[in-house]
Amino acid sequence: MTDSAVSPSGRSLRVVIAASGEERIAALLDVLRSLGHEVITEDEGPDVVLADRHLPEKGRYPAVVVGGTDADAEGLLPENAAAAEIDAALRAVAQGLIVRSSRARGPGFSAAQDAEARTLLTPREAQILDAIADGLTNKAIARRLGISLHTVKFHLESVFRKLEARTRTEAVAKALERRREDTIDL
Amino acid sequence: MAQELNPLSALSDVLVARFAAARDSVAAVRLSQRAHLGAIRWQHDVLVTSEQSLPERDTLEALLPDGSAVAGKLAGRDPATNVAIIRLDKSVPAPTLSASAAQIGTLVIAAGSDGSGRPSARLGMVNAVGPQWHSMRGGRIEARIQLDIRLAVSEEGGPAFDAAGGWLGMTTFGPRGQILVIPAKTVEHVVPALLAGGRVPRGWLGVALRPVAIPDELREAGEEAGLMVMSLSPEGPAAKAGLVAGDIVLSVDGTSARRLRSVLAHLGSDSVGKTVPLRLIRGGAVITVEATITERPAT
Image (cartoon, rainbow over all chains, first blue to last red; front, side):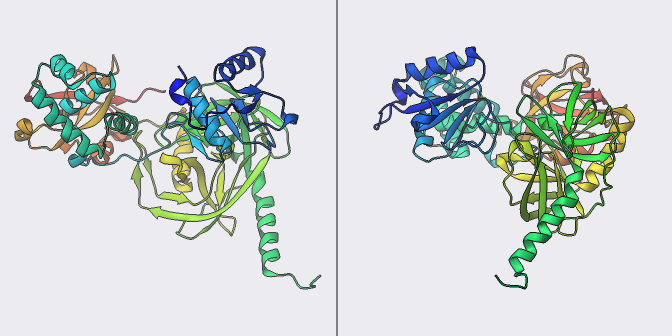
C-alpha cells in the first residue's frame, strides 16, 4: 500500500517510537518496518519521532503525532492514518516542514454563513462528484445517473468552475472539505 | 548593570504581575493521562470551559492553580455557544472576574494549561473584532473576537485578559486554526442558564442540512439557493412534518433558507412550541409543510 508514498529521496529514516502500551508500540513498529524505516532509540539521534496520541515532553527531535491534537507537534495525523500518510508526514517533518492533515481536527467553532449561490453545487452536480469520489469514469457516471455523456461533461465543467478545481482529485477534496464545514444542524 | 529599569524589563515585570494575578482564575480539566483542556474558574465550585473539546463524560477531574486535583461533574453544556460548565465537588476560593470588551489592538494575555495541567500564558493582541454572529450550532455570540496568538490544544478554554486585568472571554479554536474568544458577555449570559437547567433551551427542527444551488429548471421557485436535507432525527419535528432526505428547504417561516443567520434567529428559545411553514422542493415540485418547533434535546 505504500508504493505511491516513496519519494525521490526515498531513503529510510531513523525513527524513534513514543507510545505507551505494548500493543500500540508493536502496531507503530509494524508500520515503520513495512515502510522500510529504521527504528532506533532517542540516544542514537533520530531523524524524527513517531508518537502515539501525545507529543513527548521536551522533545529535541521533530515529531509526527498520530491521533493527537497537540498544536505544538510538527506533524499531526488522524488516528486512522494510512501507512502512506505516516510515511509522507515523517519524510516532510524530517525535512523541517509542518504537516497537518485536513482530517486531524474538527472544523472548529465556526459561524453560520449566508449561502453564496454562485459557488454552491446543485444536487445533480453533487451526485456527479460523489460518483467521481467512487472512482467512476465519465461513461460510468452517465450510466449510473441515466444521463448522456455530454450532460456529465457539462455538469463537470460547472463543478470545476464552482470549486476552482483543476483535477478530479482536487474537486473531490475541495467538495469534501466544504461539506464538512457547510452541514448545519437545525 | 543599569540602575533604572529599562522599558522592556518594566513591560516584562507588568506581564509577570498580571499573569500572577490572573492565574488563580485558570484551571485545567484532565482529558486523559497527559492531555488537558484549559478552563476558567467561574465560582468557588464552578469551571467554564470549551464545549467542543470536552468529551462526553459525566465526571471529570480538575487541576487548580495550587496544584490540587479536585473531582467534578459535568453540569451543563451548550454547543451553540461552545460553553460548558463543570461543578466541582469541593469549593475553593476563586477570584471574581471583571468583564471587559475587546477592541482591535487590545493587548491580550491568554491563560491556559500546559501539557501537565499547570498554568501557561500567551501574549498577543486582538487581531479583529466583528459584530454579533451566529454559530453553525445556532448560538448567538455577542462579538466576533479574533486573536493573533497561537494556542496549544491544552490552552483552549482558558480566560483571555486585557492589559488592565479585565476579562475578555474564553479562548477557543475557530475554523482553520483561528483563535477566537467567546466574549465575556456571551459566557455571562449562558452560564446562569446552564447552572439552572444544565442547558440553554433552543428551538429545534431535527434536521441536518447542506446549502445547494437550485437547478435552473426550478428557478421559478424564486430562490437561487436552498438547504438540502441530508438526514433527519427519527422523532424530530422535521421528520414528523414529513420531510425526507433530498428535500430542498426554500424558506422557514417565510425567511429565505439561504439567509442562514436569519433562519437561526427564528429558532431562539422563544420559538419552542411554534408551528412554522417550511417551503420546499420535492421531486421537482414546490410544496409547503408545517413543523412544530420543539426544544433541542440535550446532546
